[in-house]
Length: 209
Image (tube, rainbow, N blue to C red; front, top):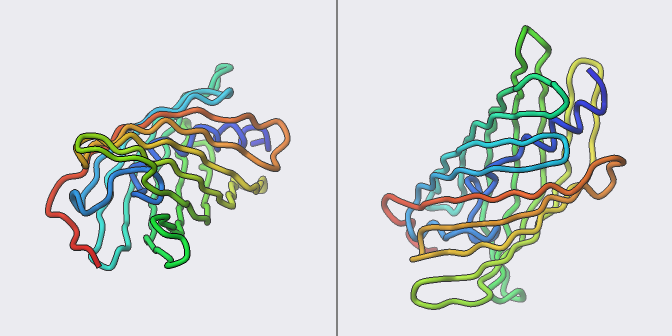
């Protein structure tokens, strides 16, 4: 297990991020349905990843989710499976107008084949987002986030700060298509990662508070 492998694993581990976010991260509000199902794909330099997730929103504005992703590193490395649990809470401030902020947390384990040691990872951070323009059928909601990320496996570990920029296209208030870019800010050798995700809100709407 090397530090370089941890970086590659990290670049392919955060797929379907919008499955665990909401308006603060450029996706449809849970007032459109307190359940969200999402799928996504990311294309980092070190491989590709695809996955799916499900999120539930509580009436307190807290939300909890989980996702599973398949990672396909390049260069002959074997595929692996990543399991994640996520949580967040939407807040608003009088001085920020329509801007929403969500503190977020994430924990995951990457299971590797052939009895190899697993990779554990977690992240703490937050995202800002707001509705930039809106019509009857479509809403544009850009977002900006930052997180402290930590990966470890055995005696090898690494941490860094990561920024995320996204543009959520929300159709009919419950379907969201989001292109996004993840940018490691202080990680030598790591390149930006482009991804896209699609999510759908359903179920009983969350009551506004």
